[in-house]
Every structure is written in C-alpha cells, then in structure tokens.
Length: 398
Image (cartoon, rainbow, N blue to C red):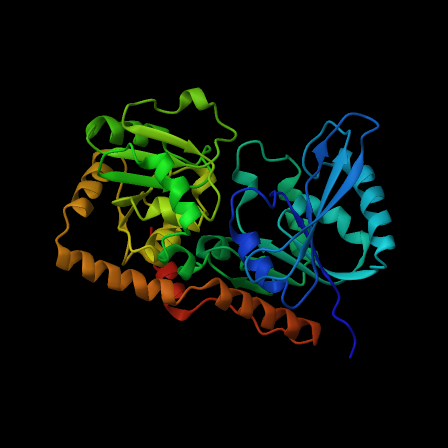
C-alpha cells in the first residue's frame, strides 16, 4: 500500500498563539497524515537566517512538525519580498526529507506561490476568516485569493457567512463551522490550571462577565466602556493578547480587568467562575464574516452568553445565545441573563447542550478527512451545508 503524502500547511497564525481552528483540526488530521505546519517568517539580523524545526504533541494527537523561517527581510508575513528566502530555506528542508509531493493546505492566500515547492496531490484552502477585511491586510491579498480559488481542489469555510461569500466562486466549497472540544470546557480545568486561575481572579468580586480571545479591531471598545460605566458593580474580565490596536485605547476602569493571554488549558478554569460570557464585537468589515470559536466553548461550560448581532452567531447559535444590539440593549441583555430563574437557566443549558453535542471538532475533522480521501480517489462529494442552515441563510438572518 502506497504511503500517504504529508499534509503541508502554510499559515499566517503562530502555532503557539491563541488555540483555535488550525490547532483543533490539524491535531486530529495528524492521526492520518504527517502534518508539517509552516508559519510566516520571523525577522532576524543578517547572518542569523535559518529554518527552525520543532515537534509538538498535544493531548492524544500525533506529532506535528513546526517550521519557522527566520529571515532578514523587512516585509512581514508571506510578502513577495520574502519569497526567495522562504523558497530557498523550505526547498532545502523538503529535499532533505525527500518530500516531493504533498497535500498542500493554505490558511492564507499569500502563501500561494510556495505551493510550487512540491507536487500538490491536492490544494486545499481552509478559509477561516475574510483576511482582506482585517487591519493591515496586504494589498495583494484579494488578487491572490482569486488565484487560489481558481486553482484549489477543495475549499472549506469557517462559517456560514463565509460559505455564502465563497460558494459561487468554486465548485467544491464546504461549510465546516467552528466546533468545540466539549470535554475540555465542561471539565473545569486541571488542578494546575485552577491554581493559575485562582491567582488571577480570587480578588475579583461577583458578578463576573468574561471574554477570552484576541483583543483587536474587532472588539467594540466603546461598548465595553459603556457596559463598565453603566454597571460598576459588574466585573468585566478580559482575557487575551492585545494586537494591532493601541493598549492605551482600552477602557481602564476599576471593574475592567485585563488578564493578558492565558493558555488554552487555563481557559476552562477561568470560565467556570464567570457568571456570564460576552461576545462584544463591533459590527464592521472585520467582523462581517467572523464565526467565533469561543461561542461553543462558552456554551460547553454551561454559561449564558450575550453577543452583539454577529450574523454567524445568530444563524448558528441564536436559540442558545442572547443576541442584542449595541449600547443600552446590550447592557439590558446582560442584566436579563444574570436575572434568569433557575428553571430558565436549566432550559437554556439544555438548548446549549444540544448545540455543543452536534458540533465537535472530532466530527468536523472526520468530515474533512472523508472529503480529502474522496478527492484523492478522484470523486468529490461535498460536505456542503445542512438544509436548516441554508434555509436560515436564504431568509437573510441577521
């Protein structure tokens, strides 16, 4: 039996950054393929260029090879100016590993020129975000995505809004929404994680309203400020790295607590001591297509959730998440969730549990694996999108 080709992944996200879609899916796909994860380059002084190789094993997953190019090129990411240095470093490594063909998986269209380093048995585009709408997006990104959609064999999207935007641009687009490792978030965390969480939160009074994730231009800073000022007795716990925005612009109030980036293993321990979880996203171009992974993670922990009117949250989880407008409506929604009776809370948790049970990362990875295997066999049967979701999209759920 012929050995399976490796899965060669190019990503704009650091593996050690926020634990999200790439880590969840690729840890599971590594049970079937050798996964090689190429991060965007790190800038170093001339003479210090090298290709860093590491191996990571997380949970019960198989080992994943991480490749981190170190170059002296000023331009960041997979910029055109980086390509000669990247091609040289990666070509040498691939030759040393005797890798001539691979399944090539892109998280960013900017890496498309690097596909030619191998013979791609399949070219896969996992479109988890509309990167062109993000702050500081490369000007070539839209053009390069158009080229990627022309040449890709399979396209997966991270949510229904992206699916709607891409489904007519390629014959094999499948919607694979963000899912959840339910056991991780329902378990409340390890003793070590709880000790860390206690050290961060033990001094905070209740009620605690929490958020974890990347803190960037997608967050509604004005809404957070209004929430903190409207209810100074509520403690807003904000967990995550601050990127692309000035930290000085964040609200500094006695009841707003910025805890910084915390490890994935610590999140359940932090979360279990929150009374309410927040999705306080701004409604702008950067959030038009987002499908927040944290939504199901909040629900898996049995917590009530209040969100601004993010379309994918409404379409996918509207029956279990309190979706509100901005300003006073958001404050009132938080108050209503905190005031729910025990019976209402049980009813809401039952809705949440059904959504969590239907959306596991194991199930998503199994669907993707089946689709790849079919494509390798010469016949693609799209995962597509379930009929209920298509019906919700067709009426323009907002």
